[in-house]
Length: 148
Image (cartoon, rainbow, N blue to C red; front, top):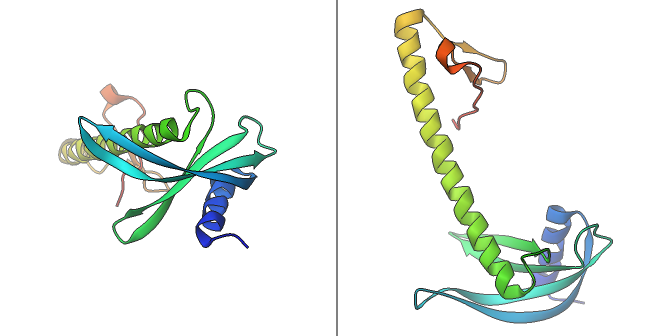
């Protein structure tokens, strides 16, 4: 029987990439940025079973607050090692944070437009999903689902 973390990582690979995997080995990775340790930990290497694009997957668990999360990165160029998998995951997470900030900023702008239109033109339209549909003709059709 294999350790629970291996089973949990295999479940994450299955959920993320839709295939089964076989544990192969563990590698230690230390990511250094500007002379400081940005991340260090154990990366598990898995052989993928019947995946259409990759033969291997690099996976690890990490804590975010009190929650355990999992990363599962396919060995597809430019990812060719556990080290590059960690770098790719960190870069992807950074991009998601930037996109989230942009969406929140856009929602703030849309709220201002909605208030302005309500004052000038009457209530704005919303579709069945609650997505704001601005009436200002200069904006054309713009559909954004803002977080509640």
